[in-house]
Image (cartoon, rainbow, N blue to C red; front, side, top):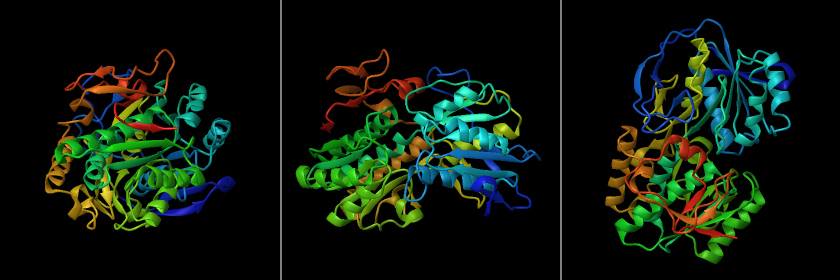
Length: 435
């Protein structure tokens, strides 16, 4: 396990103390189903486990600039766990971080980190990660990386990345649709953006499939807080969704624990995001949390780290990995990039024991089937259905929100990675976006 040390300027460093290790990892090759958005892309299709190349003797310092605090958040918490897991796995990897980094601090902190030996510098949100591109040419031997929201700019050493979280969110939607008795599901959300649209639409498709299978009439309500981490506003929205819209299943696309707190207080089901909030954080029990999805950012960081150790001057610059990509942790556990998880359990076992009697067998079987298909790269929820615009969303440069009722994508056609990452700017028809 990594040990916690304190380095220069109060930066926390995690060093692995494993003497030797044989590493079984996943080659992040790619067989994309559509044109790649950049010269070098890994979409996650067709991954096969193989032995990793022997780690370079030279040490590697992975640094993550977190846009928020780590403690008490699922987004930055998951990125922090990923850094620790890489340091635990590789004997020559250090993990260093900074918290609460805004876009005005991204470059100054990055240059400080580089002066202290950083080899890979990551911005864990797009709005504060994009400034790293401005210094990529200045430090040609450093890998820079930023999460993708909807911008897809890259350079040879400026990597963009995001997991296909929507796949696990689809499975969550199936479970949420089965659980609702009032027919009303609520989402406490941050603000309209590319990553929010992909996740909410994936969840909504799962709810729709559950509604059709079970003969239910289900409405999904979305209300925006205006930012990612606004505990008071998130609490108020959760209360409103329950009291005014009769929501009995609640989830979130924000980062504080307030929506979960409200679900506990009101005695309704909660569906978690980004991490197994029961098993990793113990924030609630399975009497409240029906299921969560867990994001293993380490699968993406693993590819960056191994590319750097291999001395690659031209690493994959767009990483869009899903459930069919995985890595093996230091303890031998294999983890997919995303998965449904709850109280340490994965797959259908992640469905809360208290919730399971309310989830019909046909939904459980469908969750199991679709999960297996996605892990095998054989099925994707964004290929299955047609995309009909709700008329709501967010306009991008030269890309207005499609008119309500417009069919943007036919059923049975898988959108390209580029389209999903940079052009999916609308809500699917039927979602109720509240003012």
